[in-house]
Image (tube, rainbow, N blue to C red; front, side):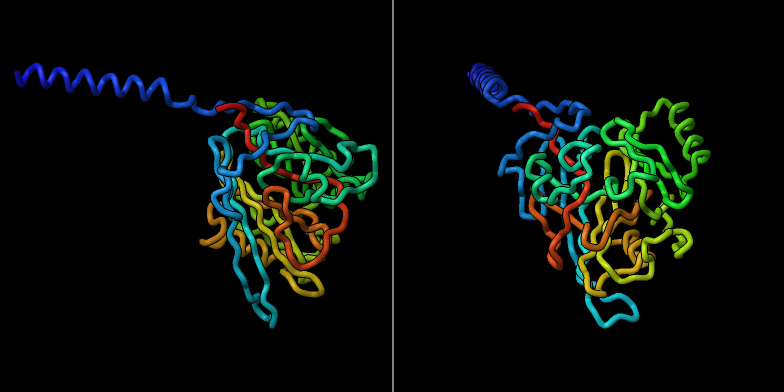
Length: 308
């Protein structure tokens, strides 16, 4: 009798498990996104937003934190924000240009660009359309310009989502880096000319007027930087400010590697700050201090979930 009861219980449990298996929705499918600039991420479900500052699905997790900070020798407090981003596929890190066209010199409002992208998080890039006579420009695998001038640092993002850089890039040093990447089987997907490099191999870099060209390194102003923290893990660091309030570049470099921010940061690269500074979550600008000027392009992260 006891044996029959045991067998009945085991059979009932097996039926429940089988029914549960077949009634459970299939796991979401994660697929690479085509490189072309017109391809974007999936529309983000509301349930993916855990809070206003955090989003998660099977392919991406982002969380933003913020802190008021009082720089040394300053009477003003500064709002700092940083976003930690983890993705599953390198194609989720993307760029776009205003009007999706390099040859069109017109700028766009950041929120107008972000509205078309289904971006989880986005930020402004360099001054790609402000200077056509210099720098190295690649966007979504397309090389638009190769005119390094020996003054600006170059950040390269390859097809595996890894960051590398060339300080004060010249034609020779840039070509050496490109040859190195090709020998390693890597392809350049995006490249930015601005800088300077703020953090390299986990160490804040020495930043002077000479090493940063005209980036006003000692000016207290709005700042924004893009960082690689690990494999397919990134960070964006933003400083609110304006009207003489903000951070100097060496302060940004030091703050990024703080324990509560990105202590594991491998590379941090300064992007176009001041009135170009933009940080957006779910297409909405979180930067508060000043109205944004129109800009040339965005760096953004998307979901790669294509089905459930």
